[in-house]
Amino acid sequence: MINHIGVYTLNFDAEKAFYQAALAPLGYVQGAEFPGAVMFSDGTDNDSVWIEAAKEGTTPSPIHLAFVAQSEDEVRAFYDAGLKAGGSDNGAPGPRPNYGPSYYAAFVHDPDGNNIEAVINK
Image (cartoon, rainbow, N blue to C red; front, top):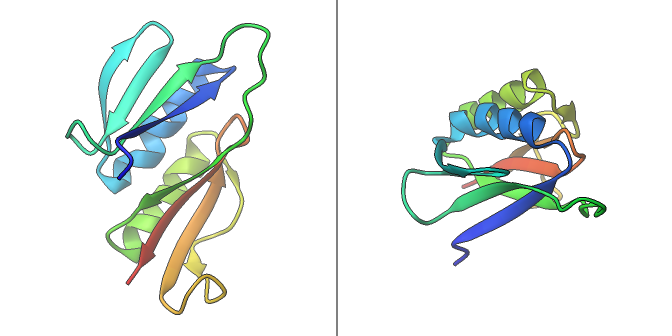
């Protein structure tokens, strides 16, 4: 139901590198790129995330953004790639029974402090 979302950053190059690495295990690839903006998607025009340079003098508000994974292995690969790309741990891969009986997720803070999640819930 959501076509795309924008994540605003004060450090465009670090955010671009983080999302490129962390989303690759989930099947996301880099698409369009313009000065100060880059899009990652599943290869369609839907389900995309734009990383955009924030306007000078503004402070982006941290967000929580969850991506669907197809397996627990993808969740673990997302987590590992996110950490290697400059993210920080916000919850290692594992079951989250408080979110649901089959909820398996991992959480990584991106370089700007956004809470990025990969989840499988089957």
